[in-house]
Length: 298
Image (cartoon, helix red, strand yellow):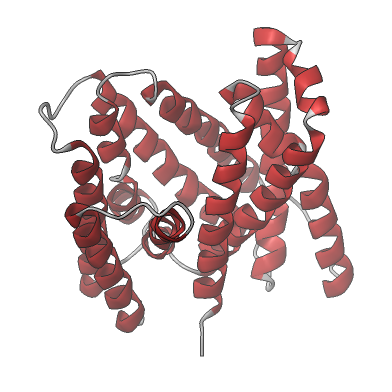
């Protein structure tokens, strides 16, 4: 029988691929910052509706948000925005390949930081699965560029910073959800998600207003694709948040790398792009890592 966290992780990875495609389309008409605002602004109503539906279905009483929840969720929300900014910054640098390779360290950083600071104990098999998956991601990154000539530069710093920020975000999301002490992982995750999206909507809205308020008109004009991004983003985030509530963040992140396989499959089937030998090797490593993780029973 498929475990719940596996289902939610796979749903999240699939929706993230679709949402990313939608955001890339939006970036042709608006800035990356405005596209980030779209993700939160158009997703917030659906997140609120999701929480309301769960509260009604579960018949839960009012929820009390502890200091641990508020601090963890706020820091996670800010870190996720910072990580996104660092990723966007990478695109303007010449050594993007170096930085993007370091971003792949997110899985390993999640495992290390989780073990040291969040008391997340991983099995030896789990560590092996994570290492194999990370190796596969790095092989794919190197294969796209023919190798890395410099192991450390500004691009690498941005990539590693983004990876660390994403890792901490995942761990803090799990901590915030678990601090609610609810029997329903779905409801705990939904409350955490809605709180974070509301915070991120305010932050990115203020940033867009400060940077170029005229872009708000463009966002409203593109309401149809923006709505698509908002819906897919909430579905994907609900998947991640629920999976983080049910299982250790490092394992969820490892399984979530099937997103790369989905993306490559789309490129092969729809765009007739033949993968290179390095990409095929990297895909094999990712598949092996995921299979080892699932067979280990975590």
